[in-house]
Image (cartoon, rainbow, N blue to C red; front, side):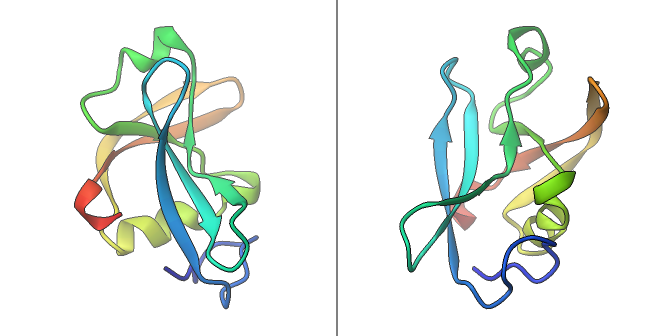
Length: 105
């Protein structure tokens, strides 16, 4: 997968999506370089147990600021994520909630 709208990922770098888990068992969606097997970005964010209860099955909080700018739009366009139409505010940022379409990973 190539990220065209992501601000801090080289649009010529081929990346793959990797589904992992946080310590509490909730899904963690990560981006890794194909050429160099190392992390490029973490799409999801773990907002703590009290916030994780807001999530449905296969849903994640998506970090859309800083180094993750543009990644959400690329993943929505590719059908990897489906916007749930809700979000959670934590600290200084709003985190959209999205469902992971596992068959697209």
